[in-house]
Structures are given as structure tokens and as C-alpha cells.
Amino acid sequence: MTEKNSGLSTDAEDVVLQQQFVRAITSFEAIILSQIDIKNKLADRLNYSIRAGIIILGFVAISILILLLTLSSQINRISSVVSEMNQDFYSVAADMARINGYIESMEKQVALLNNINGQTAVMDEGMATIARDLEAMRIAVDEIGGHLGQMRGNLGNISVSMDRMDIEVMNITHEMHRMGGTARSVNKMMPFLP
Image: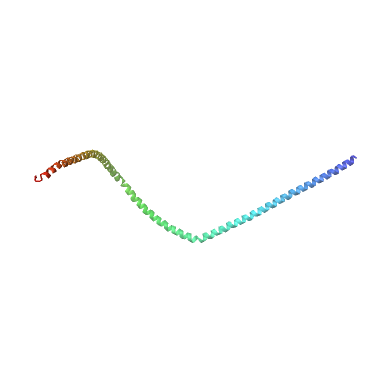
């Protein structure tokens, strides 16, 4: 009986072991297949990257070729521009020589500044004198303004007096007219008197 039990247990263990073995092989196969799939995907990506790099390098090579062709076609033009620049440099050199002459003449004129400084000091003294004279003139003009104010006041007084005199003359005229009325009535009565 123990032999039967032991035989049954070993058969069951063998079955379990076989199932575990089959599962392990299936898992191993799945792992290997996934690795192969990942490697295939990576290889495809690498191929795409290489193709893209080759295309980019082709574009770079074509652009460099176009650049070289453009440069080679422009060499004659560049050489003519360089010769024109040389002529411009000659004209610049001539202009610089003229500028040097101007600078030398300016240096001579700057050397004359000492005399100008002396004359400027004399002019400063003259300007100070003129400023003093202008101040005196301003004071005199202020005094004249004061006198003119007084004259305006006097003219106002004269105007008031003239207005009063006009009133008095009008009163005198009125009185004379009134007094002349009696003389006229006497003349009417005695026309033969002178």
C-alpha cells in the first residue's frame, strides 16, 4: 500500500514537474520571442535612422555642391570687386593725405590760440566795461521812468485843471449870453445907438 501511495505520488509529482517544465519552456519561448521582436523593432528603427541620416547627408552634400558651384561662378566677380576695393583704398589713402594736411593746418591755427586767449582777455575786460555801462544806463532809464511817472501825474493834474477851466469858460459864456440878452433888448429899443 505504501508502494502504491509512493507510486501515485511520484506520478503526480512527475506530472506537476512536466507541467512546470512546459510552463517554463513556454515562458522562455515567450521571452525569447519578445526579445527577438524588440531586436527587430530596434533594427527597423536603426535602418530608418540610417536612411534618414543618408538622406540628410545627401542634402548637405548637394547644398555644399551648390555652394561650391556658386562660389566658383562668382570668383571673377569677387576679383573685380577686389580690384575696385583696391582703387577705393588708393582714393582713401589720397583722402588721408589731404586730411593730414588739414590736421597740420589746424595745429598751426591751434598754436595761434595763445594770441586769441590774450585778445579774449581784453574782450572780457571790454565786456565788463560794457556791462557796467549797461547797468548805469539801466539805472538812468529807471530814473527816466520815475520822471515820466511824475510827468504823467502832472499831466493828469493839468487835465483836471483844464476840465475845470472848461467848466468855468462854459459858465462865463452862459453868463455873457445871459448878460448879452439885456444888451440886445436895449439895442432893439434904441437901434440908432452904436
